[in-house]
Length: 343
Ligand SMILES: Cc1cc2nc3c(=O)[nH]c(=O)nc-3n(C[C@H](O)[C@H](O)[C@H](O)COP(=O)(O)O)c2cc1C
Image (tube, rainbow, N blue to C red; front, side):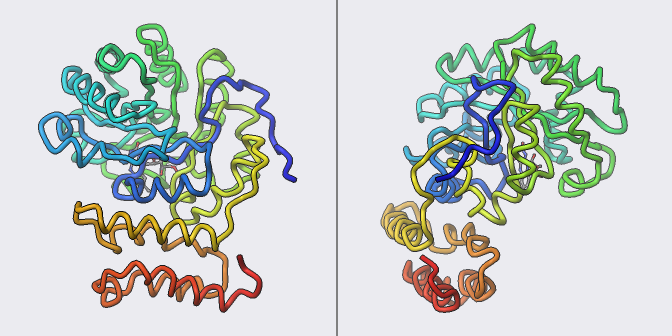
């Protein structure tokens, strides 16, 4: 039986002890379905969706989710309170538990639309956005994801002022902090996830100074020991890339961090569920293909023998063109054959 390796000494009121970060092109509903098979409690996030795309475009395409995904948050991008409110209202109807406003994305495309990380410079506008979203979706929790600062300004007071102002002017009580600055002048979004230095101490201090708020830490966290350490100083940990490239890490989280005593799912049982899911999706009439789904499975055998064969089979263009769900089982058989006793 597993032991909870870190009691959160700070606060238990926030349900998001563990969450998987919003990641464009990665955390779509197919990835989230996989994640939910691995952990019952981990909080999941959609990719960032532009509020305007929901309000003026194909809402169903962006908001569709499986009921099993909850608890799940929709992340919105935007800076127009009216559009954000309309998108939040629609999202509430689809059963999202939380709606998160992106104030951390450094992409130049996003900057042109005056949202994402550059919103950290416009705290009053952010407050208007959050208030409009909350009024439109009173039963959803409204949250913000942001950086610790913009460009080369590493003054902690800027971060504290941003969070403090929002806490005063809005009902937002949960702040997800990517513990590095966003450098808006010349770094690509990818570089902006690696190059600006991580300053976890800023996030810990934020929690100390705003102890009533739920403060979630994010950025560069890759294993359970690091998670346990961060949980001593914050209310929750959000993991991005590691949860995508090595999804099996989620299997241990219910036991380790939520005290859930149900056994972890085995590979064999997982494969059965994923196979059934692919079959259902192919029959859904939405044009979903095997490739749309299994592209999220490439990291599942991380650390096992035959992981390369698994990846190669699931990304082989000719095999994927056949669009047969059985491809998953055939690749799994290769892994099983190479790993004695794996279930
Ligand atoms: C492919 C990719 C797409 C991302 N898309 C988003 C996004 O849509 N919204 C967002 O707030 N952050 C986005 N991020 C940033 C992550 O949410 C997270 O803050 C960042 O990767 C740092 O966490 P990590 O070091 O655990 O990956 C993205 C990151 C990656 C790798």
